[in-house]
Each structure stands twice: as C-alpha cells, then as structure tokens.
Amino acid sequence: MDRSAENERKKEFLRSYRKRKKHIAALVDQLEELKAAKRGASSCGVGDGMPHAHNQTDLSDYVVKLEELKEDIIHERYLLVNDATEVAKAIRKLKDSDEVYVLTKRYMLGWDWDKIADGIGYALRNVHYIHSRALKNLEIPDAWGQQD
Image 1 (tube, rainbow, N blue to C red):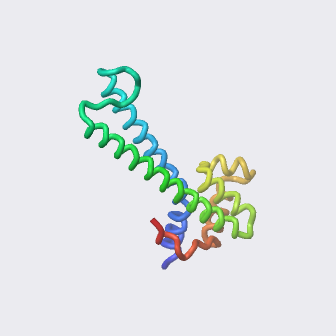
Image 2: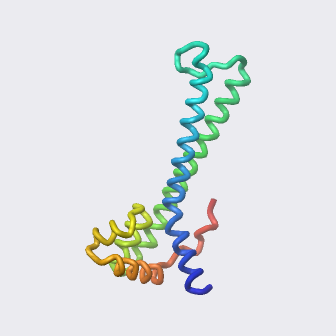
Image 3: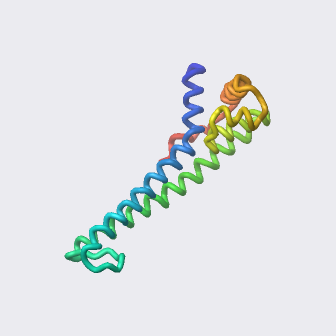
C-alpha cells in the first residue's frame, strides 16, 4: 500500500469515532421525530400527549418501530465506546506529545486546524507537519474495520 493510501486508511480509522457519533445524533433525531409525529397525529383525539391509535395494530407498529430505533441507538453507543477506546489507544501509543495533541484535538474533539494551532502555540504550517508525521507514526489495530 502506498503512503497516500495508507494515510487515507489511517484518517478513516481516526474519523470513525466522530462519524459514529454523528450517526448516533441522527438516530436520536429520528427517534424524536417519530415521537413528535405520533404526538402530532394523536393530538386531534385525546390531548394527553400519549400516542393513541384507531386500532391496536397502529399502536403496536409504532411501539415496535420505537423500540427498534432505541435498540439501534444503544448498539451504536456501544460501538461508539469501542471506537473511542481504539482511536484513543492508538493515539496514546505515539511517542511525541505534539503528535498526540494534534490527533486528539482533530479527531477526538473535532477541532479545526486554526484552533489546534492556537492551542498548541505553533504556526498552522507546523501543525500540518506534525499531523503528517503523526499519521506516519500511527499504527492502527489489525482488526479495525472488521467489526460491525
């Protein structure tokens, strides 16, 4: 694998935590939307805020969908903890504290390059150099990408 492809694979690994975090946020939004839609549909009937249906099947379908979405969120949160642990562990294995700082702020906290440069006290150009060096030194777990 050439250097560019290897770096892209490493970046994909590093981004996996924040990517899953965004996915969970989208699932939570879906859950809230589903609840709001059911409340809105039922508000023309009894106004107690609880979902009501014209027949038992409608309510059962709603509850099943709600539970499936909740289970998906729980599962994704479990995977998020795994991703965070794996990414943080790989970053901590780097020997240079500047490399650890840059990768942690960029990939775990989602900081932009300017904020990282301000935080570490280096010019933006130096931060990119440190990032490049960190990618070169980073070792990703062999098993990464085989979960899910």
